[in-house]
Image 1 (cartoon, rainbow, N blue to C red):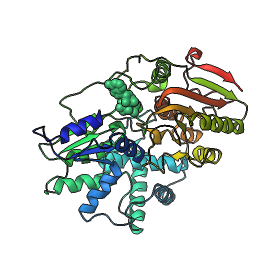
Image 2 (cartoon, rainbow, N blue to C red):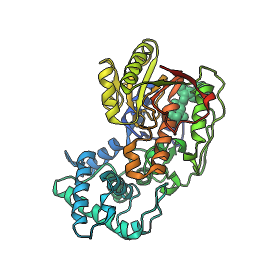
Image 3 (cartoon, rainbow, N blue to C red):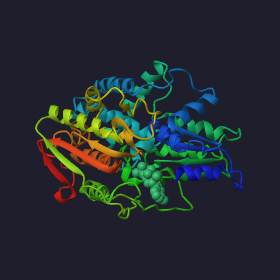
Image 4 (cartoon, helix red, strand yellow):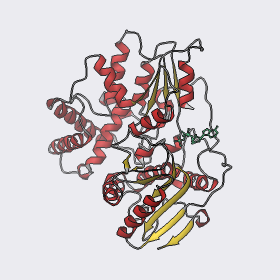
Length: 429
Ligand SMILES: Nc1ncnc2c1ncn2[C@@H]1O[C@H](COP(=O)(O)OP(=O)(O)OP(=O)(O)O)[C@@H](O)[C@H]1O
C-alpha cells in the first residue's frame, strides 16, 4: 500500500502530484521495497531515515565525514559521563544502573526533541518502567551534558538519535524549495516523535505526509503514537485484513498480542482471521543449546532449497553464533540490508532487522525461558519493561512467516509465548 500510495502521489495525472520520498525505518526494508517495486516507481526516492537525515544536513553544509558517533562509542562516552557525575555525589545505587539504562534515557530525551532541562524534568514518561523522580532526572541531565561535551571534543556533532533535532531546526529556517512534495512513511510506529516532526517540516505547505504504522509492532520501546509528535491526521484508514499469514500463524500472532504484556495499546487495529489454512506453528524442545543450533541450521538449510527462509534471533551475539553454523551464502539482514532475492534464499537476522519483511518460513530459536526476554534487558529495565519490549519483538517475528513457523527452546519455554498448547504442534527431540 505504501508503494502504491507513493506511485499515486508521483503520478503526473494527479493534479497535486510531485516528487515523493518513500521513507523506511531501516536499510533492509528499503532494499526489500526497492526490490518489490522495481520499475514501478518514477519520481519516488526510497530511503531510510538516517540516509535522508545525512543527505539533508549535507545539503546544508552540516555533515562531514565521521560527524556521527557510533552507538558503541556513544555508550562508552555515556559510561564515562556517569563516572564523572557520580564523583560529585554521595554513593547511591542509582549510579550502579547499567550503561544501557543511561544510554536509553539519554536517547529518549533526544528522540523526543527535548533540549532543555526543565522540559525533561516535567516530561511524562510512557512505558511500563517506573517513572524517574526529579532528583534522578537531574542526574541523567548532567550525564547527558557531560556526554555531549565529550562527544563534541572528539569532533562528533551528532548521534543517531539527536541528528533529527538538527534536521528539524535546519528545515525550519530553510527557505529553499523542498526536494519532496509528499512523504510516505512505512513502519512509522518506530520513528521517534522528533523524526516525525523533522519529516513534517520537510514538505511544503501544500505537501502531504502519509503514515503507515502498526502499533502492535512498536519495537523500539518508545511506546508513543504519532499523536505524541503532534501529527493530526485528517483521515485515517484502518487495514485489518491479514493477507500474509496462514490462519494458524495469525492465531499465534493474535494470542501474543493478547498477552498481559500488551495491555493498553492505543490505536491498535486487530486483524480479522485470514482465509488460508496451513500447519500449526511447531514448538520443538531440544536438550541443549548446541543441539538447538545444529537442528536449526539443518532445518534452515533444507527448507531454503525451495523457499525463502529466515532465522530470527533476539541478540547480535546469537546471530554471530548461528552464522558459523549456516552456509556462507546466508544473507545477513543487518549488514547485507540492501540485498533481496526473489525465491528460495536463506536469511539470518535479529527480530529488529526483520521489520516489515516476510518469508515463506521463519525459524525462531532460543525461545527458552532463560534467554527470552533477554536477561540483559531484564537487568537494565526490570522484568515488566523487558516483557513488554521482547513480547513485541516476538509478535514481529511470528508475523514474518507466511506458511511455516518453527520455534525451538531448551529447558522451559519462554513465558512470553502464549500458554495455550492447542496453538502449537509440540515435538521433543
Ligand atoms: N489485497 C491483497 N490481496 C492479496 N494479497 C495482498 C493484498 N495486500 C497485500 N497482500 C499481500 O500480503 C502480504 C503482506 O503485505 P505487506 O507486506 O504490505 O504487509 P504490511 O501491512 O506491511 O505488514 P507488516 O507491517 O506486518 O510488515 C504481502 O505478501 C502482500 O503481497
